[in-house]
Length: 424
Ligand code: RM4
Ligand code: MN
Ligand code: MN
Image (cartoon, rainbow, N blue to C red; front, side, top):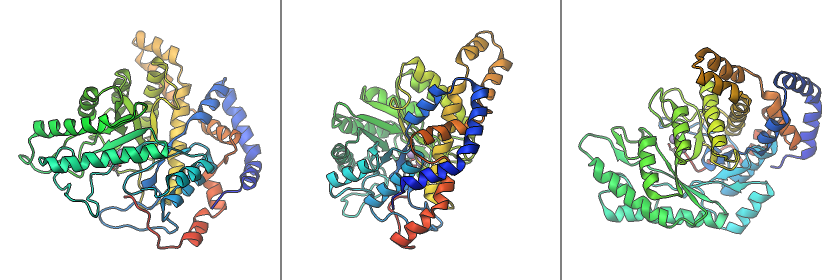
């Protein structure tokens, strides 16, 4: 299904008057907004190929119909999102859930939708059919060298696939760890993992990056071999200049100060990218900004400050990806909401009066510092985000337009009710 640009224009024309009123008010409050709007136009967030179907839990799955049946249909879905918000201009593939058969055709299809390929993800947390050895007791950490070799070879294959698609980064997330005390020698597990990662790293093209994602627990519940940012940092530091830590917002122990982690990794030049989602308890993979919008803003506040300090380009300096999975929402609506929440947090972070904040910090004026941050957080920037969309030919209200066009019903007509997308 393709969204006709005339329909988007008609939707925008209907909303234009009320949008303009809001924009005029916001601009009068903020002052200079052109710079912010341009930054919002440039900012793109990659959509995970594994989040386009309805996410299940270990207890059940309730598919909503019209799910993409192939990689081609997944790309079409991300194309729909991008047409609606012009902020989802990339897709991140998970291998082997999404192996292209004809690389050129897939690349052409993606570029017809204005999409790039962001990081490719390897999967050594599940056994694949025809795989010789099992990952039951880990992959890159495994006590058995042959199993490590199999997992290394898979990662190298994923790099090759990424090269064929024009991707420039590999994300490694390991389920490796242990479920019971005594099961694993932590030091040996670390050393095996490091050696395995070194072999994968050696296969990276010179312009590629490797992202090492950490996670405190799940599916292992006693230890995880890359459990937190410090452990990931310790690996990527040893690996070299192309290796970075990836922060998935749902992968921390409760109440972790993620914004501080982000600030320190950025300062060390070792922050690679993000998996955005939100959570209340663990790796809940809920819509970004659905639970803790202030935390999302504080993270962006550190990102903007830290990236500016290093002279980094906000849009291109890090890998921006969503990693969410949802079992009660329409996945496409959920992703539209996530992108919107990320854009809002980014726009609010751009509003922070950096000079005034620095002055307040230097004077230990704690009250003032809080006022500055919360003023930015409490500013309604939705008209700026909408204006960025309007200027790039996207919809003023993507979710409303998605519903007005009955996109899901159309997809169900095209694909059927019982389709199941590969992924989580
Ligand atoms: C993990 C982690 C990875 C994702 C898998 C599906 O918890 O977040 O990034 O690839 O889930
Ligand atoms: Mn993740
Ligand atoms: Mn996760």
